[in-house]
Amino acid sequence: MEENTVSKTDENTIPETEENAASRVEELEKSDPKDAQTQFELAQHYYKGSGTMKNYNKAFEWYEKAALQGHAGAQFKLGQCYSKGHGTWQDPLKAAKWYEAAANSGHSQAAFTLAGMYFQGPLPKDLHKAKELYEMCREDEGKRNLYRINKMLGTELTTEEIRKKKAALEEEAKEGEGSSMIELAEWYRNGRHIPKDLKQSAYWAKLATDNNCRSGYRILGLIAEEEDDPAGAVEWYRKGAEKGSLDCKYCLGICFREGYGVNRDLEKAVALLKEASYGRTVYYSRYQVIQEYREAEQELEKLTGKKTADEKQTETVSQTAVTQEKTVKQQDTGRYKEPVWVEFLGIVAAVLLILLTVYFVKIGGGRYGNEAEIVLEGFKKTLAEIVCVGGIIGLSIGSLGLVTFSLFDTLGLGGFFGGIGGIAAVIMLGVSPVTKTIVIYAAAAVIVLMTASAVWKRRP
Figure 1: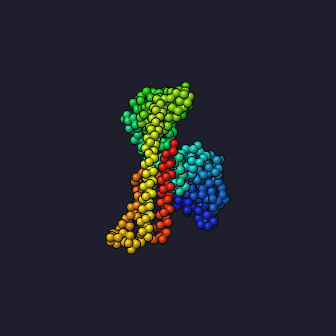
Figure 2 (figure 1 turned 90 degrees about the vertical axis):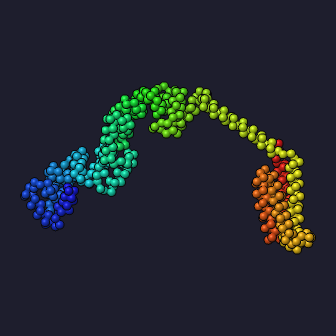
Figure 3 (figure 1 turned 120 degrees about the vertical axis):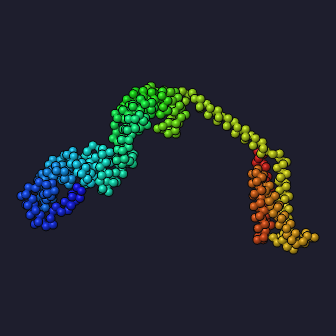
């Protein structure tokens, strides 16, 4: 209701003509208005110089009278006067006081202005206060800044949601719920949802340890670190480690590795980090813990020249793998080096098969008709064609299969390439007059490749 009154006042306070405005100012001055709305109207005339000379001092006086009566618009304008030094001295604190009063009365622009003062100055930076105020305003820029603040704080909860959840956590904590104590301690320590308060954080963390909640020791150690108390941090981590907290063992291991609060001791660091890596920490990723452990272990080995049990085991496994690999290579080498007569017998067989292939190509001539019927007397034309075509396919597969088998030492791969070659030969015989020449050259290439393969595999 108050906002609507303010907006109507802003629109109707100043009459349309200067003559009417002057009459209105004179009328208001004589009447010495007592109600807040009329006082605000008169202040607007003096502030804008409508119907009278601009007079910030008189505007300030009338704004103050209306503001003290709870007029939201006057409270906002009075805040502007203190902010800009209009009719009074500049005072950001008093400006903030009146902006807050107006914002609490539902004045959106006042909430936006005050939020900016907490977010960007001149007031001390307070993201939580700015967040709450931006949630109250309707300005688009306020919504954008609210998104930025939530991202900076690391929370998506609204102020109202945070307030309700905090109340619920406090209620559960009073009933002895350790997890609620820990969550409250974290809230106060990291300052994401509520303003940071290390004393309150320590209070809830200590209460959690009294209720046998080991996570409290880690929080107390982190608080000691923030308060620049290395010895205190180590003591809390040590107590947590003794209670079996893997997170405290990890933190204590880091302290020993870096010499923070204790004398540097890599052996103790490795032992603690190793224990932490064997389980599941609550606050640190397993990858992070294992990485720290390995780095500390490598650093210890470099400094002392000693190998840890894990490194020795890893080295043994590596040496075994190398030995096995050598054995396999030796076995493979023995299997590859077949007797010379076997390999050259394969070459001779390939030569014979290729010669037979050429012969069939010659009698077929690329056509499986009368020529084949003359050479193969007594066979019917259909049978002659089958023999010619079948011979070409079969011998092509055999010859090409032998060479690929010899080169790749894989029967399946040789048969595959041989089959593809045979089919290609038949297709070429039917369409190309120079096929006989191609097949002859191919036969020569096969023999050369097989011979080269045999020689290569017999090398020392």
